[in-house]
Length: 152
Image (cartoon, rainbow, N blue to C red; front, side):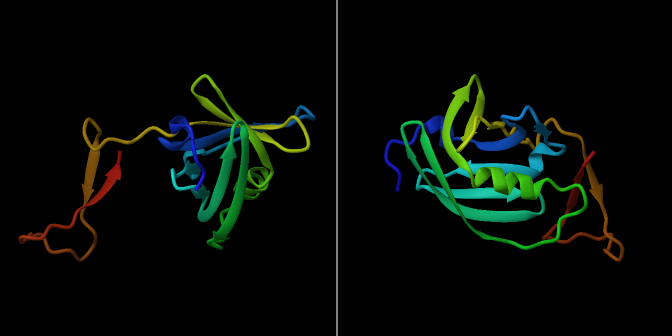
C-alpha cells in the first residue's frame, strides 16, 4: 500500500481528455467517458480503456507515480478506438501534478502529458429517463419489477 496518497487523487474517477506530446502532436479523446482511471486508496487501479477493463497497481511518492498495469480483458474494440494509445501512455507515466481541477500525468523520457478531469457522477434524479419494454415481456408486473432504462 502507498502511504500518504493525496485524497484528491483517490476521491474521483478520472476521465482522459487528451495527451499533449513533446513533438507538438495532440491526441484529443473522442469519448472521454470510455477512458477512465480510478486510483484506489489501497494502491490498486481500475482502468477502463474503451471496451476493455484493466487492473493494476500504483506507487506514489511525492510527485513520483509509477503505474503497473496488470490483467486486461481482450474485447476487440470498434474501429477508431483510442485504447492502444491510452494504455501505451499510461504505461509510461512517471510523475503527476494537479493543474487546477485537472490531473496531469507526466510521461517519462520526454515532456509529454496526459490530461484528465473528474468524471461527473450521473444522477438518477433530474434526468429524463425512458422505460423500454423488451419484446416478449408480459405487461402484467408482479412483486418483482424489471425495468430497462435508457438515458434520453
